[in-house]
Image (cartoon, rainbow, N blue to C red; front, side):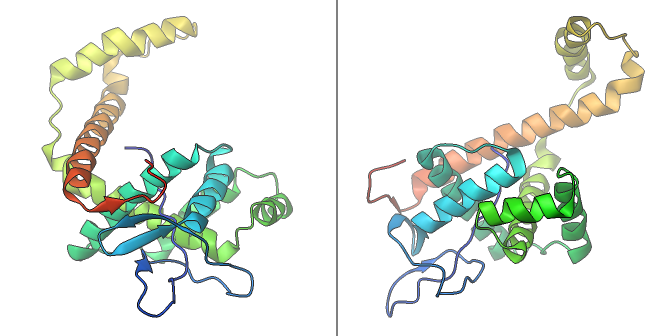
Length: 219
């Protein structure tokens, strides 16, 4: 699963209309509700959510994906967040959000540059904080859901060490620290791979059972 970054917008407030999945409220004077790009069960995803995900990915990663990929990610995020909420999975503590926000800001030379970048991307500080909180929530839930099922054998670690780790060191002319030094790091890397594989399969299976409509025929 791609890194989950939940992007939410204000509710579609028209009488009797379905709602965009829960979001960060935005001043109506500066945010125009635009077209629906997907319906997932009784909820909707708006074009504005795709734009916000695009902006947030640019802020965090320095690049973004096509609109089709962004919409697919939003649908997958809806699945994770909906199941987590139904399971009463706890929201992250504010201290955790503070740490993630500090890490993000550390990627910028100074606070002024960070603020300028937010302005360029039309993201508010409050929106970024909310999006980071959602990201933590989703990542923690899939870890909680699948980590217990990932079994890493000593042979798996040895295979990775011999076939991936050592060749990468050789390519970069770096010395071998010895397997014992890196064994736990390798184990965690393999666990993360397992979680990603299980999550991807779960999302595909879940999407096949959901009522998902995309007026434009995508994704």
